[in-house]
Structure formats: C-alpha cells, structure tokens
Image (tube, rainbow, N blue to C red; front, top):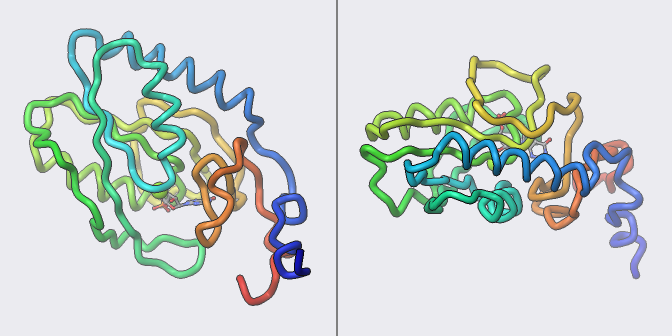
Length: 191
Ligand code: IMP
Ligand code: MG
C-alpha cells in the first residue's frame, strides 16, 4: 500500500471512538421501540436524509414494528470545509406527497442545526399531519438555531465525527462505529 493510502487508514486518523458498534445498535433498538409505540395505527413516513442517514435508516426501520413507509431526500448545504451555511439545495426531493401524513425526518447528525431547520420549514409547508425529527447524533455545543428533535440517539462532544454514515470527504461512511477524526493527522492535501 502506498504511504498516501496508508495515511488515510482509519487506524491512523481516528483520535478516539465516540460510540461503539454495540451501543449504537442497542440505542437504535430503543428508538425503534419508541417510534413503534408513538406511531401505532398512524403508518408513519420515515424520510431519510441522504447520504449520512443511510445506515441509521436501514437499521432503525428494521426495528420499527408498526407499518411504515420509507422515502429519501438528498440535500447539499453550501459551506466551507466542515461548516454548513444553512443555505440548502435539494438534490433529490421526496417521491411521496406528505400532505396529511405523519412524517419523521431521519438525520445522521445535528451540528449547527441549520440544515435541519431548513428541512423542517420546507416539509412543514407541505402540510403533513405531524412532523418530527429523529437524529442519531447531536452536537449541542455547536447549535446555532433552535431545533426540536423528538428522538435523539447520542449527544457527542464538539469533534468532527466519522463512521456509521458520516464522512470526511466521502470517506469512512462504512465504519460500523462513530469515531472522532484527528484532523492534525490528515495528509495536508486533504484538509
Ligand atoms: P448542520 O447544518 O450544521 O446541522 O450540519 C448538518 C450536516 O452536516 C449533517 O447532516 C452532516 O451531513 C454534516 N455534519 C455535521 N457534523 C458532522 C460531523 O461531525 N461529521 C460528518 N458530517 C457532519
Ligand atoms: Mg446529513
């Protein structure tokens, strides 16, 4: 392996594990049970936000025991480096009409909250019966806007996280746990 690829090996770049695989799966089971209780008889529509929420969505939906539907949105938030600006572009919109539906947005992580706050306003304008948010991770210290998440997996510190859907430059999404990236150890041309 070239030294460049070697430098990108997760083992060299991870400062510490933030959420172990077992803890993730146990918490996702609890969230699935909670959603199943809250949405009994309501056939909720779970809206996964691509790409970060794919693994969370796939694991969560298999722990929801009431009938539900899945849909996806892809958004890109303009910003520099690891900061989002809150100016959001919809790259893929929903297939479903959500008017009168019980909608739950499934997000990977709430950081500043700007992306989610845009999404909530955008979906609310389509007159769903109810609209709630389920986020696997939240970084409360970074919040720039008031956001109500009905379901939250874990609070994490103000670190750049990778794994379980979260990427750095599209890498590391497939790690089965969430880890803090050690930015000081990244090859310079990637920063
Ligand atoms: P926000 O608009 O600042 O809340 O940013 C939300 C989006 O930025 C998330 O949905 C993620 O895609 C991305 N993001 C925020 N924090 C992290 C992180 O620590 N690691 C990877 N992606 C992140
Ligand atoms: Mg995201």
